[in-house]
Image (tube, rainbow, N blue to C red):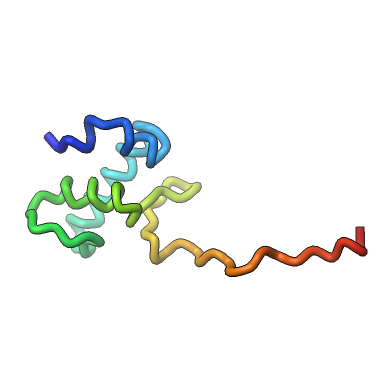
Length: 88
Protein backbone atom coordinates (compact mmCIF):
# COMPACT_ATOMS: atom_id res chain seq x y z
CA UNK A 1 0.00 0.00 0.00
CA UNK A 2 1.15 3.52 -0.67
CA UNK A 3 2.34 4.97 2.64
CA UNK A 4 1.20 8.54 1.84
CA UNK A 5 -2.42 7.38 1.85
CA UNK A 6 -2.08 6.37 5.51
CA UNK A 7 -1.16 9.92 6.50
CA UNK A 8 -3.63 12.71 7.22
CA UNK A 9 -1.51 15.20 5.25
CA UNK A 10 -2.89 14.11 1.88
CA UNK A 11 -6.46 13.99 3.21
CA UNK A 12 -6.17 17.51 4.61
CA UNK A 13 -4.46 18.81 1.47
CA UNK A 14 -7.42 17.80 -0.70
CA UNK A 15 -10.13 18.68 1.80
CA UNK A 16 -11.38 15.33 3.06
CA UNK A 17 -11.52 11.64 2.30
CA UNK A 18 -14.42 11.92 -0.15
CA UNK A 19 -12.64 14.58 -2.20
CA UNK A 20 -9.42 12.58 -2.10
CA UNK A 21 -11.21 9.49 -3.39
CA UNK A 22 -12.93 11.52 -6.12
CA UNK A 23 -9.68 13.16 -7.21
CA UNK A 24 -7.79 9.86 -7.30
CA UNK A 25 -10.51 8.10 -9.28
CA UNK A 26 -10.90 10.87 -11.84
CA UNK A 27 -7.16 11.26 -12.34
CA UNK A 28 -6.70 7.50 -12.74
CA UNK A 29 -9.36 7.53 -15.46
CA UNK A 30 -7.49 10.35 -17.22
CA UNK A 31 -4.15 8.54 -16.99
CA UNK A 32 -5.69 5.29 -18.22
CA UNK A 33 -7.19 7.23 -21.14
CA UNK A 34 -3.77 8.46 -22.22
CA UNK A 35 -3.15 11.65 -20.21
CA UNK A 36 0.49 12.26 -19.44
CA UNK A 37 1.78 12.18 -15.85
CA UNK A 38 2.62 15.56 -14.35
CA UNK A 39 5.46 14.16 -12.24
CA UNK A 40 8.60 12.32 -13.24
CA UNK A 41 8.48 8.93 -11.51
CA UNK A 42 10.13 5.75 -12.68
CA UNK A 43 7.15 3.49 -11.93
CA UNK A 44 4.41 1.85 -13.93
CA UNK A 45 2.02 2.22 -10.96
CA UNK A 46 -0.48 4.91 -11.88
CA UNK A 47 -1.76 5.14 -8.31
CA UNK A 48 1.72 6.20 -7.12
CA UNK A 49 1.82 8.80 -9.88
CA UNK A 50 -1.53 10.25 -8.81
CA UNK A 51 -0.51 10.40 -5.15
CA UNK A 52 2.70 12.22 -6.05
CA UNK A 53 0.77 14.65 -8.27
CA UNK A 54 -1.45 15.48 -5.31
CA UNK A 55 1.43 15.80 -2.83
CA UNK A 56 3.33 18.06 -5.24
CA UNK A 57 0.23 20.25 -5.79
CA UNK A 58 0.06 19.40 -9.49
CA UNK A 59 -3.66 18.50 -9.46
CA UNK A 60 -6.72 19.54 -7.46
CA UNK A 61 -10.52 19.47 -7.55
CA UNK A 62 -12.26 22.67 -8.56
CA UNK A 63 -15.57 23.87 -7.08
CA UNK A 64 -17.55 21.57 -9.39
CA UNK A 65 -15.44 18.52 -8.41
CA UNK A 66 -13.59 18.43 -11.73
CA UNK A 67 -9.88 17.61 -11.82
CA UNK A 68 -7.72 20.60 -12.67
CA UNK A 69 -4.00 20.87 -13.12
CA UNK A 70 -1.91 23.75 -11.90
CA UNK A 71 -1.55 24.93 -15.51
CA UNK A 72 -5.38 25.11 -15.76
CA UNK A 73 -5.70 27.38 -12.73
CA UNK A 74 -6.03 31.10 -13.37
CA UNK A 75 -2.81 32.99 -12.81
CA UNK A 76 -2.82 35.14 -9.68
CA UNK A 77 -2.82 38.86 -10.25
CA UNK A 78 0.47 40.58 -9.59
CA UNK A 79 -1.19 43.50 -7.88
CA UNK A 80 -4.17 43.92 -5.62
CA UNK A 81 -7.22 45.49 -7.26
CA UNK A 82 -7.48 49.24 -6.93
CA UNK A 83 -10.52 50.69 -5.23
CA UNK A 84 -11.80 54.21 -5.69
CA UNK A 85 -12.48 55.17 -2.10
CA UNK A 86 -13.79 58.60 -3.17
CA UNK A 87 -16.81 56.93 -4.75
CA UNK A 88 -17.91 55.44 -1.43
